Amino acid sequence: LKGKRDAEGVEWGRVLPGWRDELKECSLYLYRASGAMPREEFDACLNTVDILEKSLECLYKRITFARPDDRVGTEMALHLKELIAGEAAPAPAESFSALEEKSRALENEISGRLARFAAEMRNRAEEYHTMMADFCTVSEEKRRVAELFRRGQEHYFRQEWDEAEERFREALAIDPEDGPSQQFVKKVRELRENPPGEGWTGEWEE
Image (cartoon, rainbow, N blue to C red):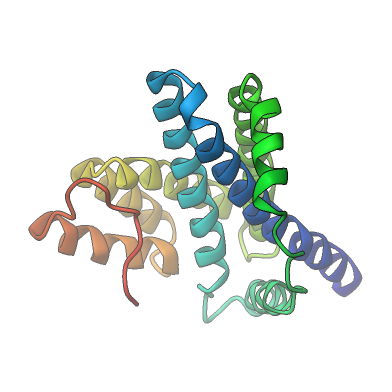
């Protein structure tokens, strides 16, 4: 079990930071190419990047939650967190002229690139939640909790507070000690009273 956990931890220690770097690169290319792209296409790509960044941040946040009675799951979460925190610094950014040259070549394919990346991230995120669930006491229940939590997040990012809280509470009905759902229920209440408005990134201060 420890060997399997270590191997998966090492892989995710590469995958999550790799996704973050990929999104930064996509975002930079998108802005470089914005002048040559139709406004609607640019806005659609920008919205996709924003959603993916929020989803990735939630994957990082989920690592920080741990169940007190789940020793193996807690160890896995801490192990992943340590691996990610210990990642090497990214390579230096390319020069402005090199990025502009790349952006021109990318103008016609950035939508496809983002679509492929979104599909990969969506599939791997499901694998990630499933992996975490496999280390918990009741894996089938945890898979259901993870799915309800994911659906709650979708409503949360759209500022659909009632629907988001309902999904998080459904998750808590299965596992009353699920830390992510507890945190998001609390935050939904705060945001319902004080809506964040347009331009909200989905983040909050701990």
